[in-house]
Image (tube, rainbow, N blue to C red; front, side, top):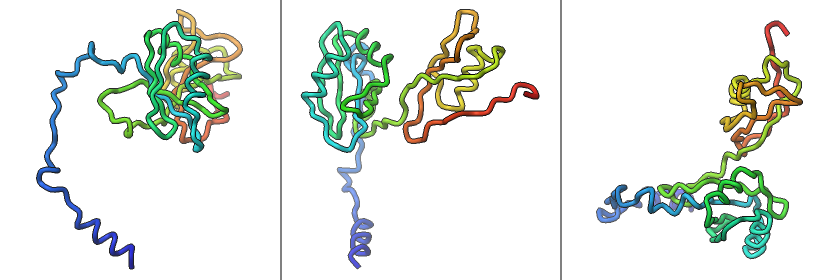
Length: 193
């Protein structure tokens, strides 16, 4: 009976006329030069337990070995805004992913200043994927793009200037969906083999 009452009350809930109006923001007021977000990342520890903010700040600052300063601001729910003095430090931290804190995965994304912090979805994370036991004919940048595209968004294929990637394995940087299990392998058919 209480559930029906709650549902009925919810249906009667409406915003007033004043609450329904949109507040419009002129995008011209927010130029690329003014954007502080280009030097920022948003990081989130993938754990249900709370994170010690001070330990997180000290540990990550030491591990990253930055050239400039870094500021951490807690956003709630194991989520932090990380502002770097130097863009090179931010890029180094991003390219060094994956990172861990207290044995928990730390996922990071670049800041989009047009999106609310609560709307951020920590769903994709870049990983280096190794493709083993490939025929030499398929160890190319083009093949890596096509094949690894079935795993996720391909960021980069490690290859020579001529496009060949001959070696022990073909390495591809892929944005993997964290909500899906990792693939353990895939079958490959080259002609009739």
